[in-house]
Image 1: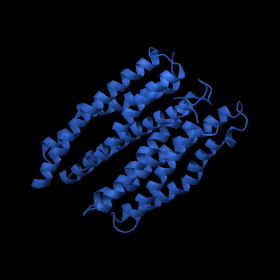
Image 2: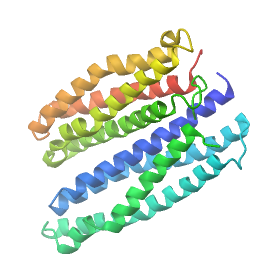
Image 3: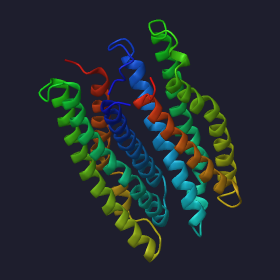
Image 4: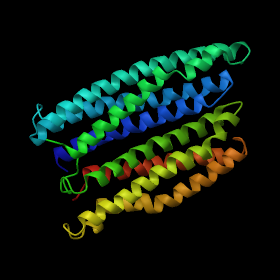
Length: 156
Length: 152
């Protein structure tokens, strides 16, 4: 196997971790939103933490080995599709990071309510239906999908 | 990221759907295994175990179908131009993981069904965690073969 083969494998591994981790985090969040008791909501939101190492690993591997591949395969760092992918990569991470921190506050509230009388409050309900969090997480997912599309189509 | 064997432009949509299916399948199986392990460790396994079969039905299975159908689409587009493509080792690994692996995936669905019905009590939850972990390892082997194409 050549160096490029290894770089491609590690780059694609990053894509698997990033997309797979994002799918896992989104699924746990959706499952949490469908619960009513704060203890169960907190339990599903806690599971999002399992996906975080996958997402962080994927973010790192896609960037490092993606940039290395650009150098190794003779593409230019100034190619439009590479610039667009980098911009979307940053935007996706920023949106996901902000959305994730909002979900973390929801989990903390659910944990507090679970430790008290395990009854949902209007505040918890509002947090679970928060359109801003939904938009941030959905936007982050769309950015990741767009990067994946750019990697495959490579529009000039 | 486009594997060198594919002609750029022709099978791009098929390749996009194939990669999307594969990465989503990986994430969905991670969810299944995590839920099964969480149910095993919990004093109240019912909430996490209850959703196991739904995750298999609405996430794992559709992702697998997308992966497999897109793989066939790619093969039908490319094998006219690349003789013996379907006999290459790295393609064979992909078929092994999707065809033989489909049996594992079906077994995973059956175990997830019983784990959900029994609210996480009994062996079905453990079997779901074990089968899911085995399938994850097979997926890693497949993405190594499909991306690095050793011995191509």
